[in-house]
Image (cartoon, rainbow, N blue to C red; front, side, top):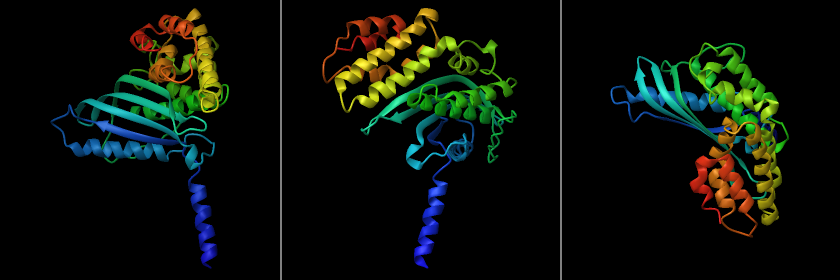
Length: 294
């Protein structure tokens, strides 16, 4: 009898461990809000944490160890009568093969978001309708996290999840700033539309090459891994030739700049002259960092 109970429990937990794709830490900071009950922000944080981690965003089955480590940081700048104004920082990482190291994949700062939230309300995602700006925002970035992660493992592996994010943009046109073409080249609209465009294909090719052919090889051959990092950045530089100030180039280096410096700051020596010239050309905003590469 005990044996069968144990087997049933094992089957249950094996089943429930599959499904949810994200292992997301959600933080809501409200330091600048001094005239509201702090409980509303704590409730919001827990609601978001549960929503992100308990929603099934794809039809794939993810084992517990496969869940994507990520974070969403909401910095509330204004609050009035259940209306919130905030900045949202979204970041994700993925494991590097044969190591304990987590390589950053995504680091996006959505600087001006607004949404309504009633304390205790259920957050439920419906891909075919716009129900609230908060739900759409979180759903959009959840799909972008999954898509970019998939692109690091398989060439264009993230396409169905980018398309899901693009659909969220389409149904959220009335949701406020960030969802339309008129909201600037660094909006959510252009983030997902650019990544699905053939013009920006070098971004996705570089994302795959950087992780699968470079970082995942570091444990076996660090020198070859470094050379493959340079090759991946060379691929990304092809985008610079057609779109010198591409938003996706910034997205790549916002996640990768510190890691690139660290990769080339120790271990076996490789030629870095071409690398530094290329980095300074395609990502001049990080020039001070590139100067640290030795």
